[in-house]
Image (cartoon, rainbow, N blue to C red):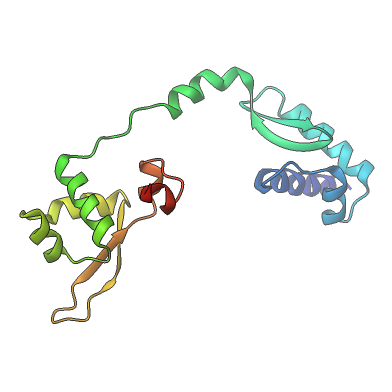
Length: 165
């Protein structure tokens, strides 16, 4: 019986952790095929276990969710507001060229910039600000570059429409 309870506790903890919104005991009970009373008992135990940690289990309007403890807020703000590593002028120029002309080859970038871009492309690829999106159907089949997954996050851009303004 104790082992079943421990498994249920782990399952509830994992469900709340991955949930996109706070979970109600009724939802959890239905998913785990448990009674609402049993789920609420486990939630009470979990809430007590998380009480003195950096992450707490909160009951918000009847639903449960994890959130950081108020005591850790200052260090989280310091972490979140750290300065990002700045990009060089060459990297910014290359990134702009890739954005406006994507998909584009290295030779095409060098022609527009008027300079070699080997190391700059390596840096931008490493930071995932650009990515290889395919190969050009010409002799040598050179790589085609486009904007990478981190581009929008790095520049805090919500979507493509924001750039068109």
